[in-house]
Length: 548
Image 1 (cartoon, rainbow, N blue to C red):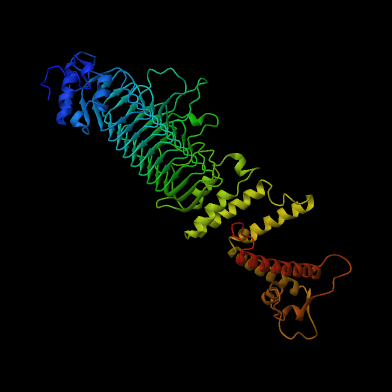
Image 2: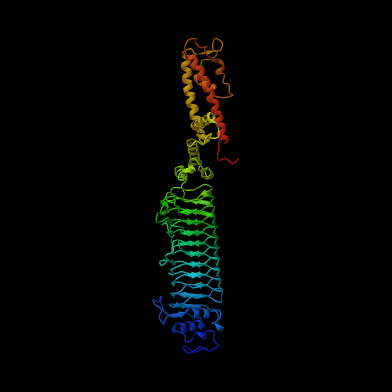
């Protein structure tokens, strides 16, 4: 073994770096003993000779300089790494652990294969290039790590976790409009992704097409989308087509300035956005801005959108499938795209009253509840409420939907002019009498009112001599209630209408006999109408939501 401070043998893989600097000798000695190379206890503020390690020396040590110690990891604390650490397309046999180190040039790991872990806790880097890199264990940019430019992880593979807790992606020196701070499109992570506990990114963060076997955790993260040359804010967090085997958590104060996009995302567990702040600087309030997009996403568990810092504006759930939905009064803003939003139930704590659900459905874009009316959101809410045992709320929604359809002219729209108005009139009558089939109890109230009114009218007509018995004398005294009921009940003969008939009308004028005759026809027509509406309501023939 070479004595401390003595030159390396000429045949040593690191001999070409002689004379070694103080920090490099400490690192070499610690590496041979499997210890941490403690160059300093804090991040160095300048590249002095005492704390400087040349990046080329570090790369040679990682690749070839281990000798018999091969397989041990490099552990470097408080050093200044001078130059580019270039391990691109290389096979790195062990873990690399840098703590509180400063890199003055962006490390390069594109296409590298690291058999252990790659860690930069509390380090300062201008950037990190690791596209197509394969890391057998964890990748850590955590514990206060700061990156000034971009982190590129496209098509990389991480055998453990991607730990970016308390990572700061500042981008403070970048003058590029629309910059991206973290690019991880196509990244594969066998464990969890952790962008939490103070993760802060200035610039777009992308995980499009990434695959995460564990959880994706971004609680208490802050992401600010960049501004383009026109001053419009671009996306903050792009998770389109991501596949997450466990839960995704954008909760506990997650905040995004700019769009959060999960188009066609697949999440095996829950998507928890409790207490999140989407559109935290109010960009979506201008024009047609959008705060959250989950179009065609599939969530195997519960979508939690409660206790939001501000209501969702311009959020889109077109074609989204979730098992359960949890929301509250803080959730919904305006311009909600709900067409194709499928959920099996409302989760625990979600409002189930018709007033809340009606206000929710009416927050769709004006065209979706007017000329280009979208039926699916209403149908889904009604079916779910009814399946959960809240039929009263479901019926109220169904009635309000019919009223809106008539108001916007959708009833009978395919019919010619005269028939169109007849259809709308019949629709209005159906709503007044039976609540469009959802409130058939109204038929009993109307029937009772018509029965009593008819009995009073026919009683007066009898007193005026306008109702005469068939044959003389009358077999039984006249019963106004029985006579009216006999007229109202279809296919039922109580004998009253056969034994009492309106008297022949006078030649001059319109008398009580004419009133009795017309009233009889009206009561009979009403009876048939009520019977048909009762059958249609109870059989569900008028149910737009019935599966046929």
